[in-house]
Image 1 (tube, one colour):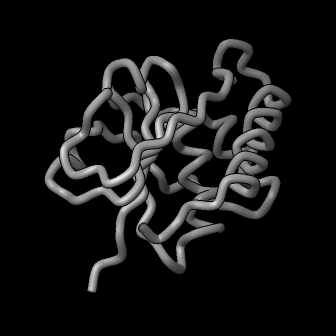
Image 2 (image 1 turned 180 degrees about the vertical axis):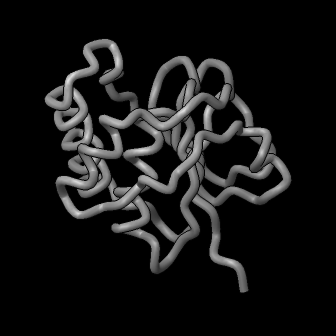
Length: 134
């Protein structure tokens, strides 16, 4: 049987959602399928890859995807990680629960330090807000 899906959405699927996907797979991969997408697909920022590699999570194989890729699948948890994604994806068919966890955009100051800071914010949010099996 296919695992229920957690879909993490951001605008460009280049940093916050990609880092959240890697962290979420580490935390919930035994219970859920985890993916990320953007309202538009772009590319995965090298700083996001580096920030997660520093803590032993490899997202170097990730690609940026559009949310349209996932609209045919039932989504157990939809998590938006930026206000723009929340505002542009107010309703996704098949999403059983919707969460908004806004994080600052590390690309506004694309230093590795800003990516580390956001990585740590995302990890802290995930650890303090467990997702139920619903």
